[in-house]
Length: 265
Image 1 (cartoon, rainbow, N blue to C red):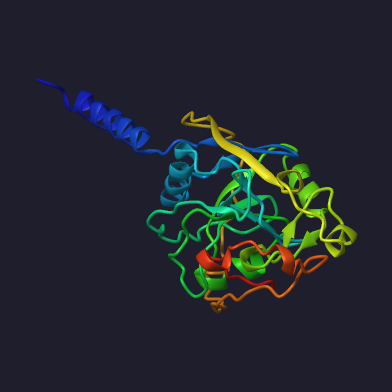
Image 2 (cartoon, helix red, strand yellow; image 1 turned 90 degrees about the vertical axis):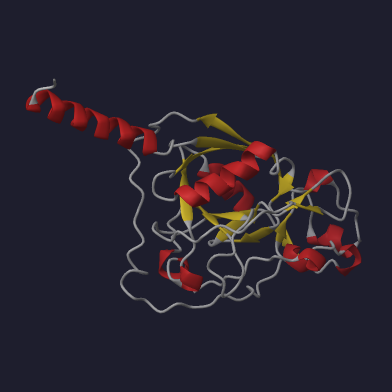
């Protein structure tokens, strides 16, 4: 028969084991782009549903050859919705059941968050964005708050800063503010054909570290604005556009448009 001391000790050990088993892996993924690779630490424990949803797309290969289809300088760079398979129009990323909103963390610079439909907090599927600036005052409260689920590591933001510096063009639909490489407004005026070499392509997103504890020094910033009762501001399309209207080269994105609806403050 166990003594009381031994029984208590074993119960404590058992509780610790159960806690460890229940802890989600602090997964690190690598976003591989044509402009460089970016490591992102996911916040598995803080936003478990969102991370699981994101990793489902990662592990299925759904993010291979996706494009950054929306760029709003000093705001966001967005991807995860459309795939370049060597021709136009772009294909859609097949999406599953929307994930429940988990707006517990703040949309500060260098974080990754889920995109969703306007006035529909629980509508995120595959699309995600990188906060290029501190957007907490806006996105932490808009549309129920946008779910931050990871943070860019090391010098990864240099890649997104390079994307941010690219010229933008209006290809219609969800690509009304798409960044293009080696393409100018003069090219647009002369109706120069856009190829895959002009797109900002994410060749793949892969898990590089699924250890139980990764980057424990990272302390994500909490979303305190939503808890403080700040008013919810339903999103709307951002009206900013790129360096040229390419009506001759419309991508058929509007037909499938689960476009992200959020606006800048």
